[in-house]
Length: 83
Image (cartoon, rainbow, N blue to C red; front, side):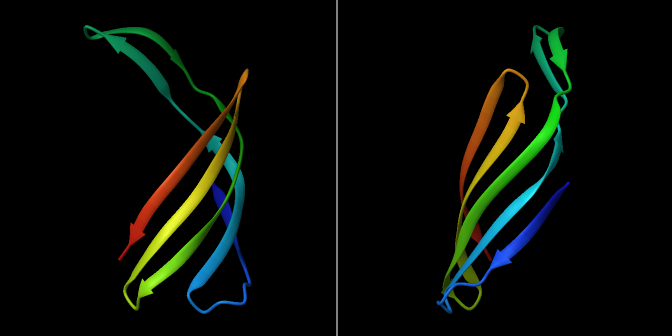
């Protein structure tokens, strides 16, 4: 569950945003159809990014997400295409 806040920027082709929320993962490590390990971490998540308009119906999205996983910090960097 994530809430997103759009941030005003002085450009008509760029939209910036920040987001924060709660994550809940279900993970399993399987080898030869045998579950070796499983867990269900949950915690806080936050991120930020920008959308860059290429045309009226196409834009690039750059974003980074952080997840507060037990005993680690998980980061994800994403590059997307929105049509």
